Image (cartoon, rainbow, N blue to C red; front, side, top):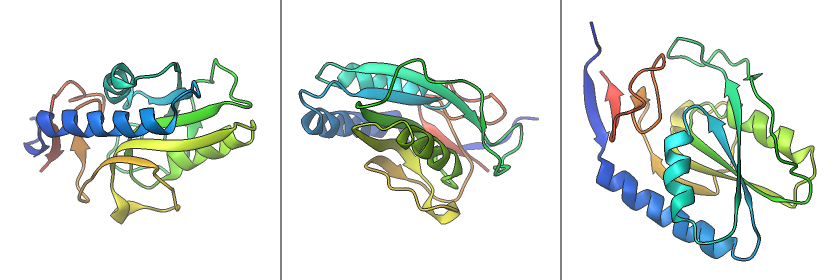
Amino acid sequence: MSPKLKKLIKSQEIDSAVQRLASEISMDYRGKNPLLIGILKGSFIFMADLVRRLDMPLEVDFVRLSSYGSGTESSGKIRMLGRLSRPVEGRHIIVVEDIVDTGLTVDYLIRYIRRKNPASAVLCALTEKPTRRKVDVKIDYLGFTVPDKFIVGYGIDWNERYRNLPDICYIE
C-alpha cells in the first residue's frame, strides 16, 4: 500500500525559487567560475535546473553521501559513497543540497571541503527543516523552509521512490 501524499510546494513555486536563487548566485559569483558540488542523489533535479539558469562560467561535480538507508529517520552516521573528481583548493565552492534536515550530512561535507583549502565554501539548499537541526549549519542560499514532515518530490525520495514528482509533497 502506497502512503498518502499531500502537496506542500507547487512546481511553479519551486521554479520561481530556483530562478531567484540563480539570480542571487549569478550576481554574487560573477567572474569567479565557481565549482558547484551536488549531493547525490537528492540534489540532481534541483541542481540541473539551477545550473541551467546560472549566467556565468561554472563547473559541476557530485558527491554521494548517505545517512538514511531505507528509513525515514537519519542514522546520524554519514557515509561518503563517492569522492570529488574536481580539485577544490583555491576554488569558490557552492554545495547544492535538496534538504537540510539534521544538518549532519551537509556539515560533514562542508568540513571535508574546508580541509582542502577552497577560496570559499557556501551552501545552497532547496529546502530546510530547522526544527530537526542537530548541528548549526549556515545556509547561504535557501529556497524554502518546510514543516517537520517527511517530504518527497523534485529529487527528494522516500526509499528511492517519488523523486520524479514535479511538486514537493509530504507523506501523511
